[in-house]
Length: 218
Image 1 (spheres, rainbow, N blue to C red):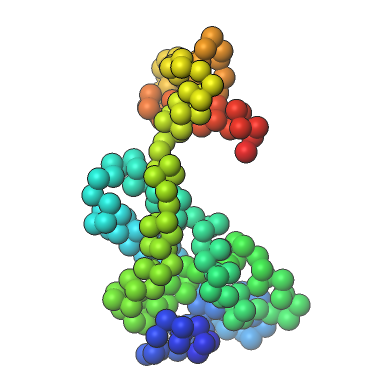
Image 2 (image 1 turned 90 degrees about the vertical axis):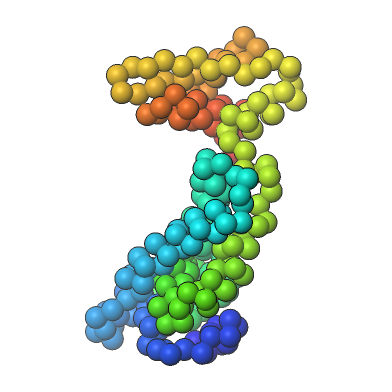
């Protein structure tokens, strides 16, 4: 435990909260503890989401609301958190029950672990140290994303198809009840369909479906 805390210059005021952050249910059951990392995971999820929102607002003044949402989704997700956990080797200090060693490599658990550890840092050290930790983990990922990754599906689809044809992508969209339905039309062909609560949402989903189809389901 001390090794990971030393890595970030953390001098714990309450070491117990870090042990809680690394306690899986299997370990708690064996030891009859009345706590696991799950409550801290809940707090960490909320803290990270809020911190990323503020960071994007302050550091990317030219981004629209939609672009900020796209960029946040790239960095704030289970896959991203699992990768950060692996980089920090958090799984090595996860406390698991006998015969449950494989849980140290479980991506879902590793993602939860990153959130619980982040919450422990905030609750024990306060906002300044929490933000310093975020700066070398989640915020670092945000800074690395390219401009391409900020583009929405309609823009990416247009660019993809323009490499093959100068024809502009069109969308056939209609409303049926409370939902909008959209289909992509390009160069006389129809492909990619989507629905949503708004015209914009339906067209974005149609474009995303079309991109997936054109790229062979990738």
